Image (cartoon, rainbow, N blue to C red; front, side, top):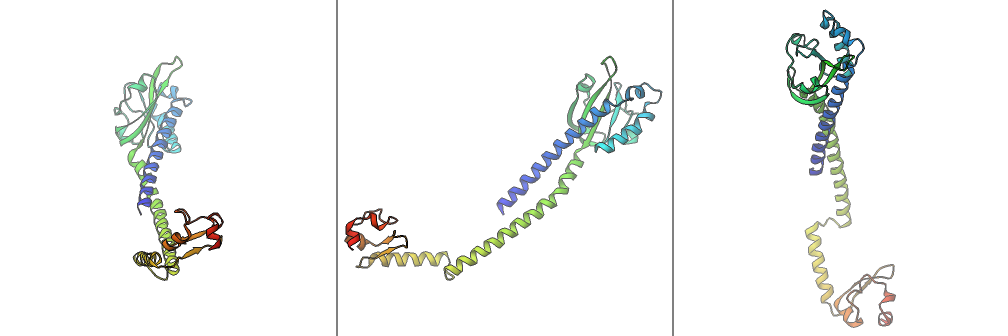
Length: 246
């Protein structure tokens, strides 16, 4: 149970890490792709950039799997957004790096809530930054993806526990059959009793296995045959002529 619990916890943590990493990759890829989209600069210079860019941004958002593609000029006013209520409003977020020409990925609280957000600069023909494309994925969406995988982990865990339980039961039945139903305490008492009797008898007692190895010698046998301390486990041929005569 401890191993299975630890494994499930590790799988959940790893799944969250992988999904977070995937969200970072998807957001930065979506932002950079749209920042370099053909016709973007012309749309930004038009009389109504939102009318031209909003359908394109929504189409790109759905295909890339992000929660929004937000385009805005350096004045910070959103020209595109998945939430129409945010159009024309100031964008929330630390976008100074993108305004300076550096793409980045961060986690912060935006208009959609706590999100993983990537931003990429839009440059004109001279290389000057004229706009920014931001692409967020909400942490809630990431957690939902993890939650959808948890039942799979739990079913696997229950299956592992059931399999382990069946295996333990089969092993237990086999052991009890081989030990005639004796438990650990009974076997310990029996061993202690037999060992005490074996070493207390006045006759020498030897037990030799099929391979010719000495399995057991009681105290009297060791005295009579002058057996070394390490005699048990050795082949009888290596124990000397006295043993052979005996």
